[in-house]
Amino acid sequence: MISDTTTAKAKSQLRAADHNRLISGVLVGLFGLVVVGLGGWWFTIALGVIVHLGLLEFFRMAQFKGMRPATKTTLVACQLLLFSTQWSDHGGIASHLADAVLPLSGAAICGWLLLQPITGSIADIAASIFGLFYLGFLPSHWLRLRNLEAVDVAPLVQNIPWSWVSSGLMITLMACLMVVASDIGSFVIGRRFGHIPLSHISPSKTLEGAYGGLASAILLGAVAGAVLEWPYGPFTGGGLGGLVALFALVGDLTESMMKRDAGVKDSGDALPGHGGILDRIDSYLFTPAVVFYMVTLVLPVLTKG
Image (tube, rainbow, N blue to C red):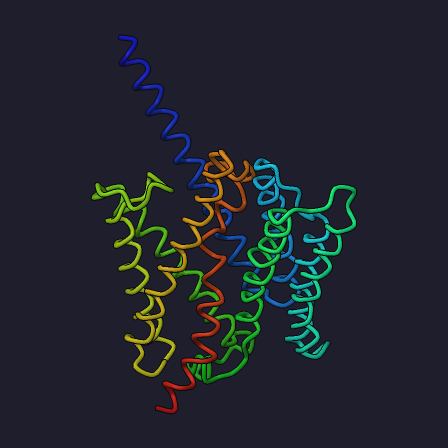
């Protein structure tokens, strides 16, 4: 009787957690859709808030390991990096000035650690600089993607009568949907067919789930490549989908590795059913750079070919 009661209670808690996860996921998805659609400084400010909260969670984990990162300096540097990227893309400042923010911020972080009563260690420097890269430089590529205006990266845009629909909007939404497809595919296939553990870093993930996420992203990418009228459409889009799924998985496992090392289950508790901000955005950190350089470096070569 006690066992049956315990089992029923556990199932009820699991259903409640899944319900909270679903509600939080839908709300986060709607928020993302709105800010991506708005673009410009609205998108920049929203991304800045997410980055700020994510950095606080990252530094919290670093502090659990006894590190003393330059928290305030890095928080400011990441915001400067995002805002200078947006300003540069809109012609407010020269692009090389925006590019200078990253190395100058790194020097400022090291200088700050030098001035502390207890001089910073290698671990303190590494945590601070990685925070700048992980939650500053990488997310700034979402702004670069959203601000794309070149028609050749999404020829379909020429056939759309609405002026507010740009190449950047379409490609940013495509990139987000690829990550979502990868997450959903890995979750559904992993829960239904998963048996082989993928990595000891994240015991809940399975090899079958990883294949499911990869297949889902490739399929969506193939459709997107054809719709956007890319050269070799389905093949180019499917290849990008595969890369997005791979780097989304790397982002997910990287955050799991940090949580495991810090001895915490979740990076925070900001999102019911999902944990912290980092738990929700980990798959979205490495992927925008992959998509950006694919459409700005590889697509032009394929087009000329």
